[in-house]
Image (cartoon, rainbow, N blue to C red; front, side, top):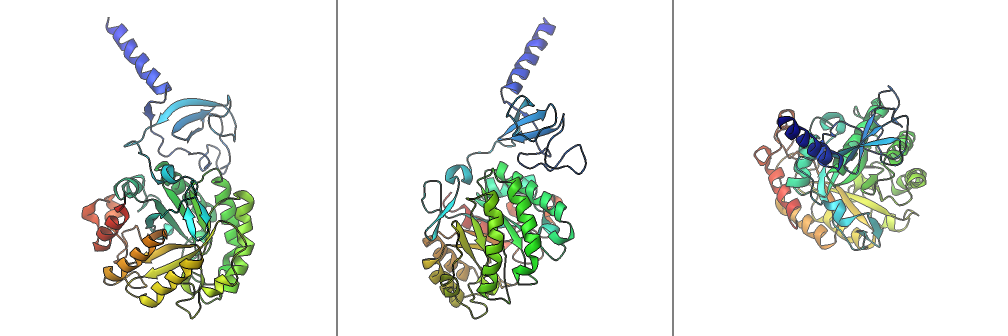
Length: 397
């Protein structure tokens, strides 16, 4: 009798397992289309026999060499559904779907204006994967903060991409996969800053975006920002860079939304004597393009706010970086000035990501110093800016 009961229990378990019960821990396993781990060192574009990969919540194992989509054909053995802790409820990507630019707005799958609200990482070389960006921290951002989007800030210099292109590309791919599993949008930020002319990094940018877009071309939740804060150059130089780089992305993913930084540290020239009219007179000749604006509320007051207001009347704008402090992300929070910006962006459906989701010592980092090392991301770890921002993001959810 005992043997019969044990056999019955085993049968029930295996039945649930094979009918996609939540039985598999997929953490640390390739998630299609990111071929970032293989048992053949140095190969990142296919699976070998025995390699596991998960796709759309299901775990598969390759029977032999393949680069096909998991679940497609007899080469893949179905192992069951991935465990979700807790199971992910419907997130922003399920609600809004594939985005596009319609007129001056970012629009959802039904061509209705949408406003995404979320956070930017700090530099991935300092606060990235397995530091401040973990399964736990991203889950907190998605399910507790109810953020729509995470911006992944990949510095080019300052110990960033140029020091180890393959490692940073793999890190970005893995973070895209983690955020995608949480049904969020992902903004890939090519964080060129110094030197300020984006053309300096054109060759690296072409290689990076070719690799990243190829790895994620089947995803509809990824947005690409090709130039963080151009500075010391006019709009013509940025235009020249963009018309060289955007076709690299378009050849792989013709419909991806692409963001382009503007002159004066992405202020439409407000910080260097330029104007949004420079862009109006010479817009980029592509569809699904938006122009970026950055502000720091304690430093950038009415003049910059008016520039954003006027520019967004005639151009599609995405605020990819902003803070409640001074332009260094330091000092006291100016919540009144920040609220004026938020009200403006809400009225115009301007999407935004705030700087930054880390435990850096500056007041602009939302977590207290040491939080990431301890793996603690709850409310008790938040600095004043973090408390305020979380409430701003949760509004409307």
